[in-house]
Image 1 (cartoon, helix red, strand yellow):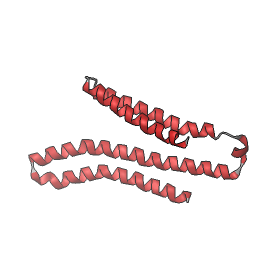
Image 2 (cartoon, rainbow, N blue to C red; image 1 turned 180 degrees about the vertical axis):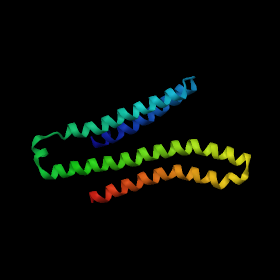
Image 3 (cartoon, rainbow, N blue to C red; image 1 turned 90 degrees about the vertical axis):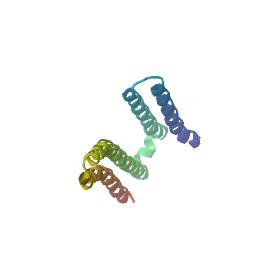
Image 4 (cartoon, one colour; image 1 turned 60 degrees about the vertical axis):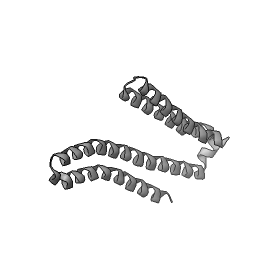
Length: 142
């Protein structure tokens, strides 16, 4: 039964990618396909977040301190995942805008290569900071 709970988000993610790819190939705008992907991600996140909470809803277990500690650890893991995920998305967006500008600046004047490389690296630094925060969160859980 646990295999099904693990397989559902994976299958849902793969199907949403395939459907978004087909929609773009048929003429749908990329922005609309991106919004469809984000909506499907939110749906999978809600299902994965709420199903275990509903399945383990027991008033006797909630009063137990061991169950409360396990819940706190679970929320810590979710916090670490959100810190890493959102920082990586932000870093990807930053690099996505900085890299083409850096290539354009370098093609006009090759002396700008070092300066433009710094701006691209600053965008990647955002993802590293998010990973550092998640490592700090995970070290507090252990």
